[in-house]
Image (tube, rainbow, N blue to C red; front, side, top):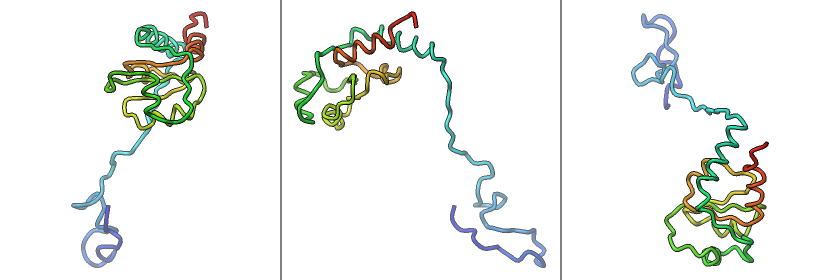
Length: 153
């Protein structure tokens, strides 16, 4: 909103109604009385429901899993990473799950469009549903089984 800094006319003696600014909502070209306000909408999900959703999605996507012994790179090189995982199609969404933070792995995939990196203890339903292929190492696979797939918790 620009303008409207000074009073359009004096308070008394003109016969017009009081006016403080040209940008009043009552004036043509003025502001909006109750305009849209940015807000954050938070929806609470029960803990057991969230675990059930994760378990279900993990079960439904088990055919898309590729488990490696280790997901470690010596240098943060994208080409080395692509040769390591040996993917033919590059247009499908790939989720890489690691058991512990790995900077070389993170840096080698940060400029790839369809690759997402996440830790095993921070899994979420939205990332899992977006992925067409899921790549992980054995330790993260064990963490996922232990954390999310035990029904007696």
